[in-house]
Image (cartoon, rainbow, N blue to C red; front, side, top):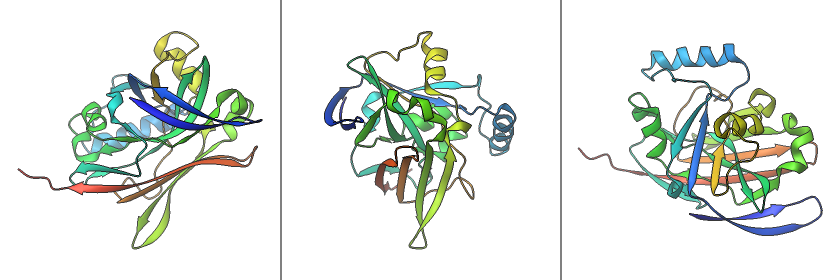
Length: 227
C-alpha cells in the first residue's frame, strides 16, 4: 500500500512516497496506569473485553490505510479516534496523523476485529520526528465532530499523556527503529462527552512550539446493515 505525504522539514518541503506492508495500532498507550485501568473498567461494563497486555499492539491490514476524503462502513456504530502515526522513510522516523476508525458494536465482541473492519484515514502531511522530538510532549492532539450542524470539539489533549513513540517502538519491536514498510498509530486522548459516531471527523496534530499543524478531514458513508 503506497501513501504520499508532503514532508515539512524545518528548511524545506518535499514529497515522500511511502510503501506500507504492515500497520499496527498501539492501544492502551497512556502514561497514567491508573487512568488506563479506570478506562478498562468503564469499557468492561459495556462488554469490551479487558486487554491481555498494556500497551497492546493490534495488527491491521495495511490496505486499510487511506488518504481519501471519505470512507465507507457498514452500520452506524463506527467512530473515529485521532492518533499520531509514525513510520520510517529513508532511514528517518516521520510523524503524521491517522484515525483509528473503529466499529463500536463489534468492539464488544473483538477489539482486534473492530479495528480491522474499518478503514484507517491518514493525513497527507508529515513532519520529521527529529524536528519535534525535543518538545514532543507539547504537541496537542485534537479532533472535532459535527453535531446538530455544528462543529463540536471531540478530543483535546497533549501528547504528554501518551507514551512516547520511541518507547512504543522499542517495546513492540525490541529495537530503536521502526521497521521499513510499517506504520504505527500511537494511542489517543479521551473523547469529550463520550465516544459517539459522527458522519464527519476532523483531526489535528498541533505543534505550539513551531506554530504549525497537520490536519485531515473525512466523511463517513454509512452502508446498510443487511441481515
